[in-house]
Length: 452
Image (cartoon, rainbow, N blue to C red; front, side, top):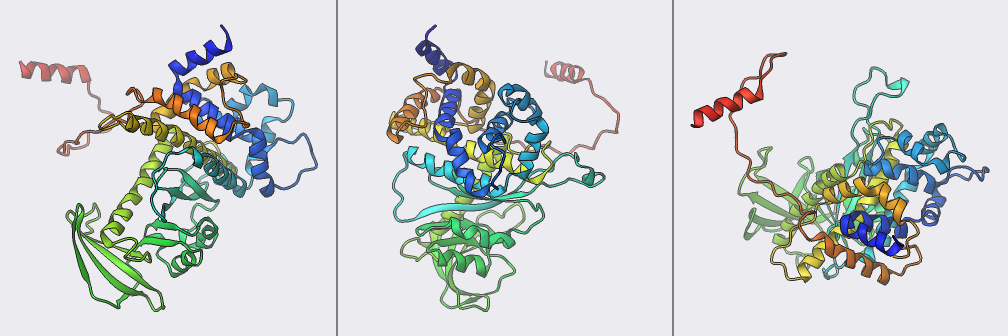
């Protein structure tokens, strides 16, 4: 069987796996990875030392879930055994600065940006800011013995609402650090024209004025601990799907900062019993009216869905990596790979819309990740060096055309996101005594007899 026939067979059986492997080859080549991380890595006199790209190559199967651990992935990468031992791999993972991984995420996001077909949204770019604490790791270090739930760190990410791509990330090793203490490190991520959407953790004078100093604007939920003084009348903007919207110009605490306070009186209280949500913004009313401010903040919750998709589709939180830098490396790499999944997902959905489908089913990144996990080894073995696969030398136009061609195969329903129906409320039943058991077959048999 020739190379073209092998390529076509994989395209028919696992188009998502082929797409992701091709994007990795084109957008995350070893040369690109090493150049991106080089400014953040200490110089090494040893020319045989594992390169940053080698570490990425070992971690990728772990992130996709095709390797159960770093040890498993290292054993499969036999070509690296002559370069470094497993102990060396772990040491290098622990010594890689989080700034190098953050640079990788940003560089991949910039590289895949031109591959999206996004409608013009005017002069504003809406970007959601949120934090994520990595899940607790296993107590593998002697210093962690007897301590509960060791946290390897946290990440604060900036996500573009138009594409769903995580454009920037801040990785911090202290799992207990308050997000407010990290504000200053976030400022270089903001650019003129950005509208940063964030929750009440970022409702501080330093953050709001820092965003303004960068030429950007903000839409931030009001923190109850911050006093506001009205400097204008309260205007009723009428009903929106979630409630009634009001707007007031206010002075922030005891500062000279004057903002718009948009309040939404909710039709239904939140799970916490909150009936009124206040949102502060410095975007002019002519550019973003109060109802649009309410809708913009409501879309902030899409980043929480993205975090869930990231956790379900990829293995970014590796509980066996107890050292913070190694754990953050894996999480950052998973975020970069998620951006590639977004390219594939959006290309498929764009094709569905262009084809005239009335309501195209959204593509599930979780199902994309599962297919990549299943076919990763076979695709890498069979298609590496195939002339039909992308290379770093491909132009953006050629890569976009290749993605669009294969994305058409992702709209046949097998990658469609599952739709959960309304969950019926069940009465609470007393907890069974410890050690008791139930034979399911007998219970079902009793139900069958009753129904006759």
